[in-house]
Length: 269
Image (cartoon, rainbow, N blue to C red; front, side, top):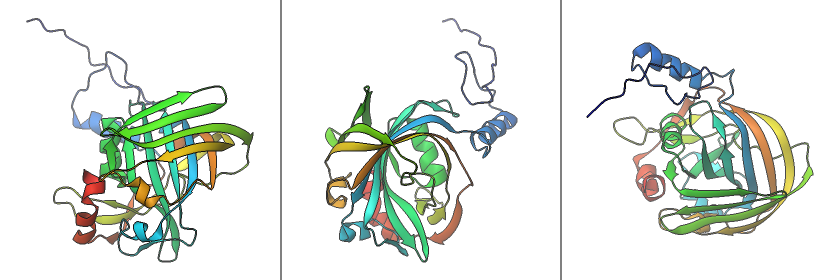
């Protein structure tokens, strides 16, 4: 057997690794890589393309997926979206779909993510470990046409989201997705203490449009979207943005073991 010696080519400062790059596995390189990924002054995502809809939520069902102290706000709505990330600063391109509930934590308005899927393992690991997004792997199809996007989210043979969005007029403002405060649960694996954390990101919009969507929601035992979403979309939008990480998550409360046991099928299965 022969071995091919590859030179130690470093990843670029933007985070995109050349084909012949290999890590040195040194402390200094790992620290530099982490600093680059979490740099609040640099874009973490470029030209991210979101197709999103504001959907009504069943409050009784939502109460079962929220940690203690976090409640649905008076709108009883959530943001459902599918997104294509064609560029990231951590050498991955991937797609994602999620449901962000509009909640209140004491007097503060925020978003809580009870369900999110990706088609890339790097994005899964980073999202779960650093920001409390309970990411799972799924198949996500994304097809762009002249005036519309078609997306299908499938997991374990079940179509969970099937959506077609047709672009409309440009708009000045759209409901927030990541650029808002969050209340997520982190530390659910191993000996880490489960806790509620808050954080937000910074979005720089490139394009914002109203959209008409045809949306079909499915569900399963581990992905019960159909029990949470209670009706057709109230509005929908298409947007392209550059995104930065913002501030690192800060703990704002502890989470009971009861919540973790109750949510195990949805978060960890």
